[in-house]
Length: 234
Image 1 (spheres, one colour):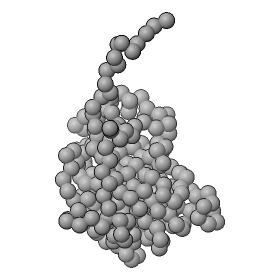
Image 2 (cartoon, rainbow, N blue to C red):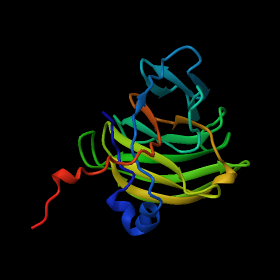
Image 3 (cartoon, helix red, strand yellow):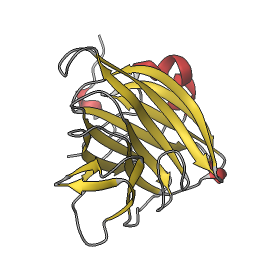
Image 4 (cartoon, helix red, strand yellow):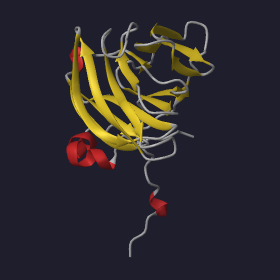
């Protein structure tokens, strides 16, 4: 059975619903989960991150990134989903797509990213939490913000970043928090046509990090035709 996750989201409809649904791409995924302590050349760790069991944590001050190295069947159109462990306020949690092997948040490599910046609990974990979600890119040495929005946050929140191509030139990034669509940005495919999935951290506090990493290829298989024997009119 297919594990289905739709690309549509209520938060995106007002911004790009007509454009998105006009593509007729089917947002259906079979996710692959990969532990950060997987061996055999699975990951390239850049900067101040390391595996702590299956999770990704900071190994010092500054930024770090983990890039998944095995080849993808379609390195242009896919989704990356991360689960964030938030045990205290602060830090930046990054989900990469179409990234180069040397990607670091902010200042190294080429990539598109969805950043969850400075999650802040009002008093203690378990109380209301807010953060800023940012769609960003780094291409040819230049960092730019594509879109941003305030978002709710929580321990073990899920972040989804989707890259899709409408044609050889035009594409889009879609950003979700806990399956609610918050961010959309159009992209120029030739600027960064493909790359690897990954995750990163900037100064995440002790006890916090990336708890789980999943990715999935875009599946363009449409739904089965409706059996006319099950249709009726009245």
